[in-house]
Length: 156
Picture 1 (cartoon, rainbow, N blue to C red):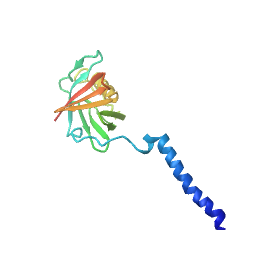
Picture 2: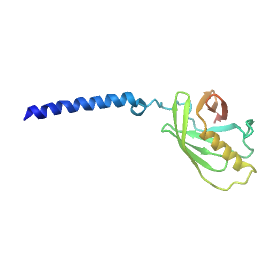
Picture 3: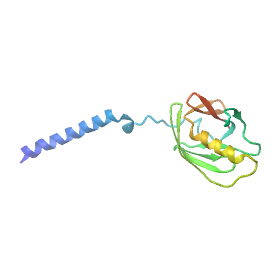
Picture 4: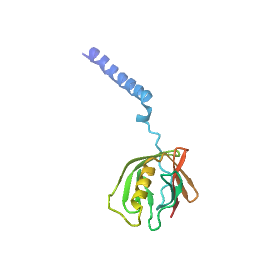
């Protein structure tokens, strides 16, 4: 009885090990993630937007009377104010790369100051298109790869 079952029992652990090894080689990103813990200087009490890329591809200051903020937490969530509405989502970092996911916002009607709705729309679009971040002293720059500086924040 042990002869027939003994061979199968010895064969199954070997096949399980081979399956795990093959999957590790074929899909390394699925088994071992390269995503790192966000650096402490990204996790600040609050970042305040000071410039953003306008639709005309020129740097624009936020409208007077609006405050656009961004907060990151260590658990991969972010939130803030887009000037009138609140927004939130998830992010991950790997080196200087950042991935923004599941961006959502409230949808209150905002008319004061004039243009705030367009500013919010542009800000949220730029935030969702950000792929790289750089922190230099008091400033956080979110960019589209190394091609365009999309958003520039100053720490509180």
